[in-house]
Length: 288
Image (cartoon, rainbow, N blue to C red; front, side, top):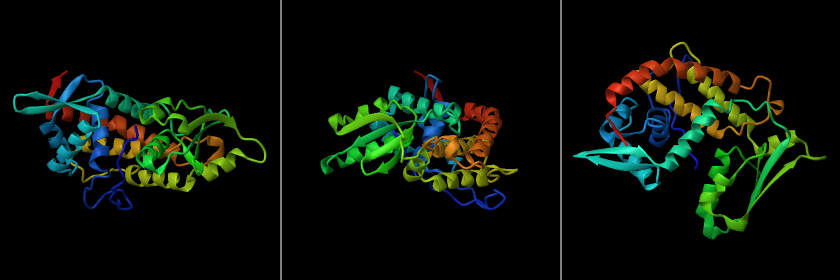
């Protein structure tokens, strides 16, 4: 499943000190970060009122939080648990799988692919207009899986990819073909990277991240480190979601992802103790 949420970014001032604190992402993207940090692996459901309190720190309205939680229930990402007049939300197995995938992308995959063996995974598909929604979902899932469009109906990703989990929920049947292959003359791997992936756009994302976070005082107008933690993780997850993890040998030597990853990891570790302490005082949880 692709993590939804388009950028809704406020432009920072040159020194990173925003004149006004503005959430960097839409509520659903922030919710994935919140659940990945404060719900995944905790074996508990979280009271909706306390989630609203946390998101108020980010400038997100109560209505937007409730709407996001309701949508995630409909998408089999959350389940409701009632205790008296309170409603708690817990992760479904589907949500756990999605969030674990995000955690691996953030902490284990790394910003640069230095172990590429020259193999490409190819996914070809031809879905009729009657399955337009499936086609859209497939493209979103392929992007999350590190694929780029080489030509109409043909997507590629570096390395041997297991796309079973990407395809299974969509039930594409025999309308999708998956192969592994290597480039052969006159095709060069560098040409495939250039055709299927927008390197400049990916780099701009990392530069924007650095402009926002690689400063002496990131987001000084944010109320506390819990807010900064959620915004940092959301910004970073959106970056790695769009990064196909291309072979290092076909990227510029000054590839900004390297510095951006260092900044993310340093800040994430710096914010964690105080953010965890704040969350413990704000969140009302129910063992499930």
